[in-house]
Length: 336
Image (cartoon, rainbow, N blue to C red; front, side):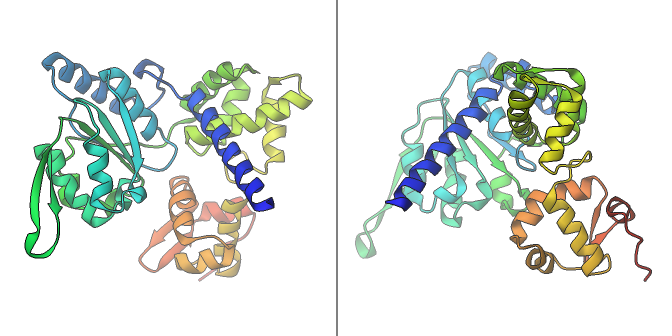
């Protein structure tokens, strides 16, 4: 009974977190902050497609997690006036899964596949004809009685999102007409997102408080909104539901997020490289064992920001701490 109750509690929390994210998610291009060049290209493509009475070309979004790939997919659906049907790569394990999804579409619908690089290879190959010819061939029966049946599909738009574009096969990548790489946000852009989100949450925040949260959000809107959520809790109890710069500093200090956006795991990674391995080079798997985290998590969730901010460098021999990492830890670099 305890396990069932715990599972139900976890489901309820996930639903509340999802509702929180959806509540803050912009619904139109004019509400979307940042990624201006990408936004302009997509708006142009939407207007051109609508003017011709055609479906939008297939779109691929790549970049680190939390930068707005899913949000832009829903904005495209709203702009085109069509439904958005969502799924994820790991869920599509066999061709029948894809066939069931595609045959349920209406003309013009958008299919959004998150983490598209994690699709099974057999499913990916079925996508080729679906994207290009809007048809799929299904095998019926087995052995001597096996035969292929061609299913015509309504014209649709596939929107794929990936955090690792290098893992997408070249034939699949070539079938996307619009390929966009989302980049990290600057603090002023994130401050605008924080201010907008605070208004939706009904919490008062001044520009300095919003910028303080933005500066520690690792260039990522999702992290900025999550930090706002925690700072809001602090302000509600200790600051009469008002977020000033000092309130934000106090709340984020309590969360152990430093002024540069580094959290406990970031510092643990840097300390491991600098203290245990003399600044490197050291392999990713060795770092993962030392800090008790999965290699993929370190590579996808922590390294991009550490490299972007100049704390870490990748070399053919492994990861190396930069002078800035030593300076941040207050340590003197080991002489080689």
